[in-house]
Length: 387
Image (cartoon, rainbow, N blue to C red; front, side, top):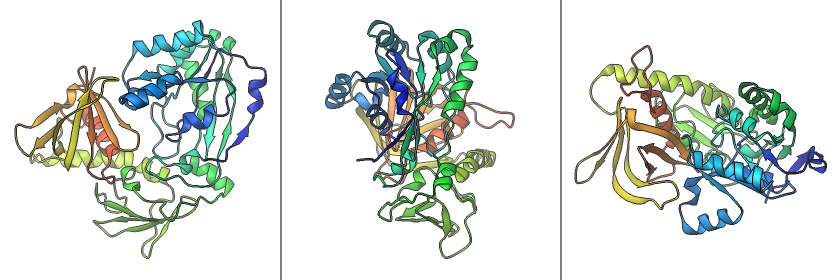
């Protein structure tokens, strides 16, 4: 399916299990890309959200997958990792970013990763995937043809782990995994084909217009990416760079640049909406299905209605019956599963939000929850810190 160029694959000639594989998380099929080039089976840590159906649970357990609840501490997962490394002398695969990249740049690593690797005290191999993000972008349901390579490095030896602190281990790991897809492609100049649908559903990642600041008004069609509020038109070319589309030049050239701006601009947008103090929701999505479950248990449908974000809560208003309210101070572990499913925890239950179309942005909801839950100096948000 993918033509992958392997760099420094000879590291495995002298390396014997147990060891840990720690790649950057560029796309949703990273485990298969990396695992195909590791000479022994890899026990990947995977979100329990991928194992809630009997078929997927059976298949993933068959290959030794270790389930993990996204974004929350999980002692059961730690025990599974230790068993594979110490008792079975096997290989474990961990994605320290916790989720696939939205903009092609390595994300901040989960801080506890350094402590875990020091506990295991076995060599750490860091495969860096280059071109994988553009081959199957986070926003896309279709793969693209272009360049793709995996560079293997032994980032940490057993001796390193014994003498280094968890903070030093994490810093070494960050340096080894650092990758910017836009910079890599600019240096390689490899065109990516996408059946002229390169921008399709990009609004799930880039949901705020840099020209007018409006949220939820971006719309994609084939290679075109347009703001329906101000009319700013952009075209995404074969090198994943924004070009003019019959109007003003785009403010940003790359998805990464736009995404970095959005992180700050969206916070400012939320703050401005809260200052209005009019009691109206900050934003809403109609026709949303909410399901409830726990870890590997199948999810059950609980309500359909309009999901609204307020400064201190998420509220689901069904067509009939009382609204379902989630105070932000009780919400934790928010994240985006697969391409566009919003998940979060409240108490011992996981809630999954399914949007009626592929154009609604689960990332927008995830970012809003994270920003509003913790108050800052300007008084943004009214929820208490989770945990």
